[in-house]
Length: 126
Image 1: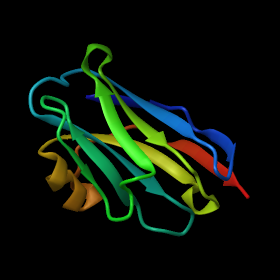
Image 2 (image 1 turned 30 degrees about the vertical axis):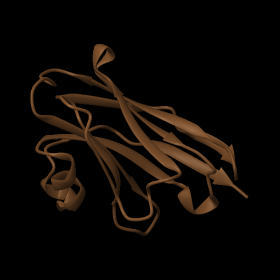
Image 3 (image 1 turned 90 degrees about the vertical axis):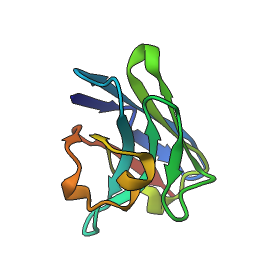
Image 4 (image 1 turned 90 degrees about the horizontal axis):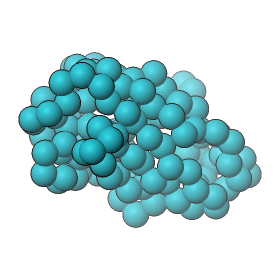
């Protein structure tokens, strides 16, 4: 599976962005796609995951509400809608995929996840 994330950029606090993660290769079956982020000097943090087959979702602590994950199977793409962005949301955002379930991706050590896209930078100005 190859993943390509896009949609990052500079946004003012309170604004919104939608990130996209296009997947190519063997994305059928039991794959889960997810989003993580990593701010400078911090650990990679789980945001949300979604089952490619049935759409079940799982969110990290404090992520539900402002962040919404979704998918378009016809486009092999997962999305992360981010609303009411804050300066502390500034980070590199990564999409990931693995043969697992949404909750398992959320609680896993990120280094154990099989597939990663290159990150896309989100900068939120105050």
